Length: 223
Image (cartoon, one colour):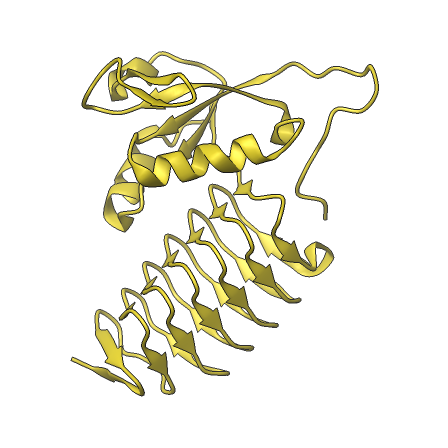
């Protein structure tokens, strides 16, 4: 399955209006994924950032905070990228804008190396630069996989997970909803991360986790 749709030759598609919710560092990263595609992925037309603070502030490349949540209330047929790293805020935003006429595209950097023919992916995911993914992987909705992560074969990632830079996930790992992997963490082959698991920065996990728990250290232990 091809993730990127391009405009070829003289054939032109109507641009789809795109907004990024948030105006901080992660929102800038999302914008850079948009900018990374020479034709702009899926023929989006980026309009601006949506944030409840600092209306009018220039965020990057001349693009501004053009409105708050109310700005989008009456907009039809729009595409939103949730450029906020906090898992709970991300879920709240999705619930607020989950309408038939609002689409949540996947934002995937063109440098991602993956066997897309054998990967199933939902909606609203952000996958940053230099991520490497093997084969037979299932990715749900609204996950953020940050720079330089590796994901092994036969991995499943549910919804609203945050995988921070440099994390390494071995094969046959199962990650349930709302999990957070700290930068540089390592998940051993075949582990199951139950919902709301937090893995500390640089931790190496060699055992399955319990729900609503935090694990730190090498080997990682529950605290």
